[in-house]
Length: 181
Image (tube, rainbow, N blue to C red):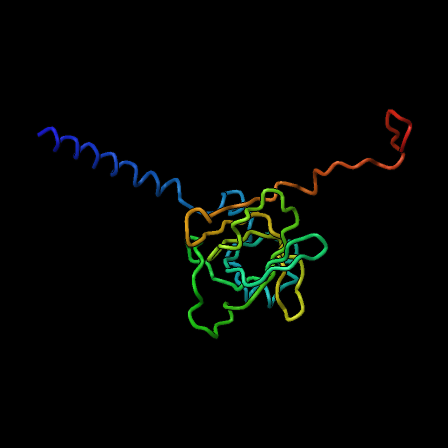
């Protein structure tokens, strides 16, 4: 009898928490990026109307296929994985689908960037559209990423917390305590 009461209490808790989780949401992307990003962007739309998306925030899925260091920045060459409605990367419908193309992601500030990124099977990238690379491949400046590896220890996320609007600089003509400009 006591065991049955305990299982009923557990069941009631689960039935209460399940809708709560659905209402709160289980998005792998922080809400601020979901609000600010251009809705419904695909790799094809980026390639076809790159001028429209320049400097705008977009969300794409992908898998890293290559990495390069250029000018002290990490460049990741990514094969696109279209996102489903829950922002989970998926394989394109067919091997020849245009959504199976490539794009570049630039990691400017590597502070706290997870070392496990080399083990990610897929990732969700939030980035600002920079330009088109040769071959009409979009280039994104990474703002946020969530990667998923084959083991939970490889999972990771990263956010570029440096906002260029708040970088301190010394205006010309300002003199410090030592009499220097």
